[in-house]
Length: 297
Image 1: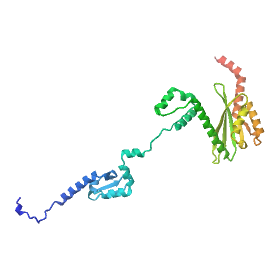
Image 2 (image 1 turned 180 degrees about the horizontal axis):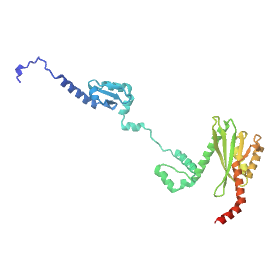
Image 3 (image 1 turned 120 degrees about the vertical axis):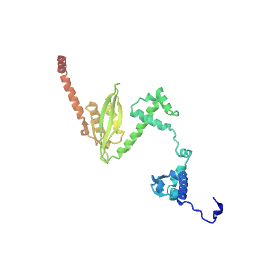
Image 4 (image 1 turned 90 degrees about the horizontal axis):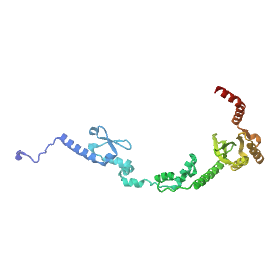
């Protein structure tokens, strides 16, 4: 090229399309490296329309000539807290998470509840294999003896029976009771005392209020103690029992002690009456049935 023919005052023309393409590509490279794309998603046709959607609120912006200034302004004005969260380091996040601290008292509460609900022996806490399990889960755990388990269960009972007493005070209606007797395989007799009442929301409630071990012929007195403990003598509507004779002793004692309770408020369990009748009938037929069995065999 002859340099003499070049006029330095003459404007040099550059292809406009080429210029724009170069600038656009440079800006696009810059925008890709920008932190703003942590918060925005480019449109599927971004190269043509330069649109991007906010990941937090869904608003769409146009990046004029690939610039992201308006996107940054949106994040700072609308989602500054989100931006700060993104900038938090892992160490900062771990500091913000509350640390868990082992609580042995809470563990013992759960342990006692587990023993009650699943009917485990109190001595299970003294078994070496059980202790190994607990210490494997939590080396800092401190177990208790079987005697302490028993004491905690009785404390829990007293706490809950006091709550039952308070709830009974607020009952506007009457309370009925059912009584049942159970004998363990070791020939120990126990009596359950269950209260039944309808609350102000017309919901039927059934609450086991006592589980009493019976000694000798003192069942009537034991039942009286269980009911008197609830302080609701004037709210008794009726008591349903089986047909055992010692239940009559209890009913007589209750009627004498509580003027609002009459013997007519005592109901014999009809299902138990039928059961007794069937058992007597089977006894009468026992000899004849034995003969039939022998004949068939």
